[in-house]
Image (cartoon, rainbow, N blue to C red; front, side, top):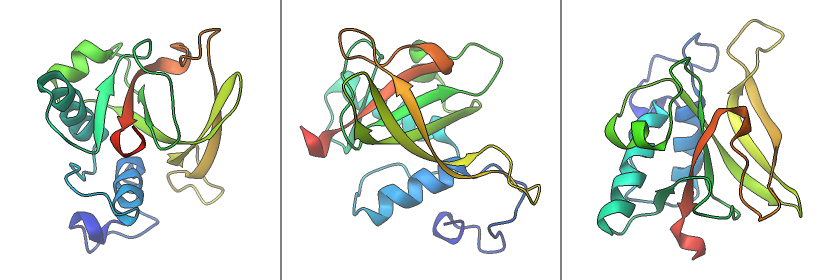
Length: 158
């Protein structure tokens, strides 16, 4: 995963946050191209938002939570800072603390996601790969709770 991003000396026990490298690795292994593979989520979030705004083709387009109902393979964007990151901020910036998870299961009132670097491992390393449940509102959109601020639509599903 790290080697795929150009960090050949880093391994799975580095103290560096690795959730973006994990998401990039999963997207790359799934055969996607023309994705901004990065070790920081903000870079590919901004790319997806810009692509949607200008109508440029790409594997993902960025939406506000109330603009797109989640589908399998979509990516949920979460603020990990204390700055109150939102869609508009993400559109203008490619560096801020964030996290992303990939939607892997749809339920009537929630979605299940998978993400990397979630929590702390028993060995003191930065987290593990884990699943989360995220609630949907009555109209089928992700709720804004849990500091969620955007959803990247998987354009291969449309």
